[in-house]
Length: 162
Image (cartoon, rainbow, N blue to C red; front, top):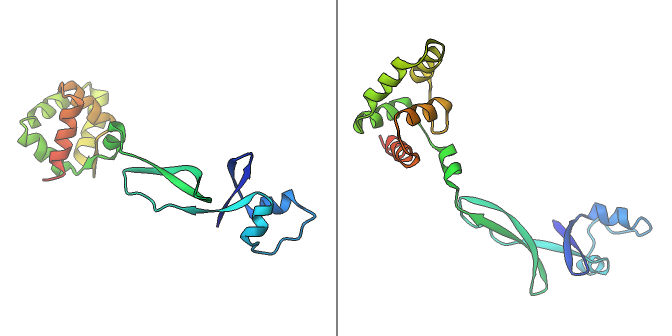
């Protein structure tokens, strides 16, 4: 169970251990009653149902009709968060590049890399088990191809359907 201590109308998360430490001369039962807790400004906290959203974080603890309730803050993913979650298989990426007429540009990009970068890029291109939207190679590759962020997002959204 979660508790708050209310001081001057402000609720702060609090535990029964803290209650015992703050009141060393009081013998509290293992599970004090709500009435006993209220004498010390301590109240149980209930949780509202967790909403279904991309990102859900604990919000403030508020008093609703005399009961202290843990609220939730929710929001959709930011574009950067969405991109960090995008991934596809190499097969899917190659098919999407082929369908959008960009596969040849990738081959051309790889061929023009300096020797010290080319070997690493070819290993990643040939042996990766997944292509992540925010990987260094893909960011460099798509920028070199002149693709916008939205075009790369669209490419990944297509790829995962293939």
